[in-house]
Amino acid sequence: MIRMNDFRAEPAALLAEQSRAFERVQRSGWYILGPEVAQFEKQWAERCQVPAAAGVANGLDAIELGLRALAIGPGDEVITTPMTAFATVLGIMRAGATPVLADIDPQTGLLSPLSVRHCISRRTRAVLLVHLYGHVHRMDQWLHFCQTEKLDLLEDCAQAHLSSWQGRSAGSFGRWGAYSFYPTKNLGALGDAGALVSTDAALIEHVKVLRNYGQSERYHHPFLGANSRLDELQAALLSVRLAWLEEFTSRRRSIARRYIQGIKNPLLSLLAAPDAEEEHCYHLFVVLTPQREALRLHLQKHEIESLSHYPVPIHRQQAVPDIMEDPEGLHAAERHAEQCLSIPCHPYLGDNEVDRIIETLNNFQGN
Ligand SMILES: *Cc1c(COP(=O)(O)O)cnc(C)c1O
Image (tube, rainbow, N blue to C red):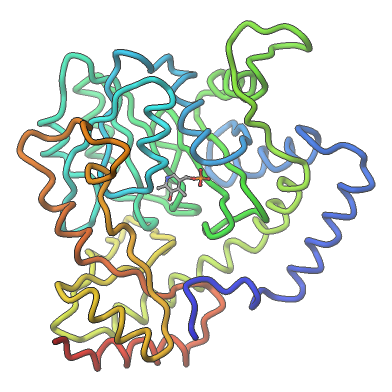
């Protein structure tokens, strides 16, 4: 079986480095918010071309605490996409704000500026972009849009590690970028972890207070915070894995190029490829087909795993029956949810496996 992710194929040298990091933390006798966290935050901020980062417990908390640090909460609306992980919308709701869903552009799967315009009200405070699948797209238009509408631009970067537009990293465009280091993300911990990055160092300092019960100095609590601290162990492992990330990301990019060149089946279509200004990190590689279930079974029969991201758009989720949306509807998101299928794109795939996947896709004849 060719899997979507194959952790057992990780290089022995990487595993050995992780074991040394584990030993180092174990012997240090310091397990939460210490030098390993500070070191990882510094490196991750550099990698994202911003002055500061705050390590937190997961990507969901990064979004919630980022909103709270901007005082976006009850009575405020945040526009985002229905084609995302549930955590994007849950983070907005956990901050007490109201999510409003705009439709996507069917060519990219990303938020449609036209639909976002329909969603603006007197209460709108921010647009939370999701760099879905790792595609950071046309950031000039979003910077301009948010500036003229006087809205905060925010970035959910949970799928966009090392993605960039015109050489600028995901998370460096808006007020902040929220990262997840869930194990299956391009940079993943051996457990849960996340970070908020920002060009505004004071905002990051505020998040560092919020992540630790709202404590400014020991036993002094100017704010009602959360417990969203990052472990030393996860930070140490992330620093090890960060050193490999560039190489793994170029492998993902070359697999994606092979797919783009090789997939020729008229029953399948691909999302718009990144243009010359965009460095996609290919967290996921997605094909679209009206015969999605048949294609999934065909791949499965040939021992190739696939998954949909996402089969149920946010506005169809049981937990949010009354969620606000573009009055003209979310038709492109609904069609995408019916047609999208993610195929394996992890860095340990060999060219022979990629070619086998391409051949299997090209042999798909539908019903
Ligand atoms: C994974 C993910 C999150 C949530 O991150 P967690 O660390 O699982 O909380 C948020 N947004 C998107 C787009 C994601 O893919």
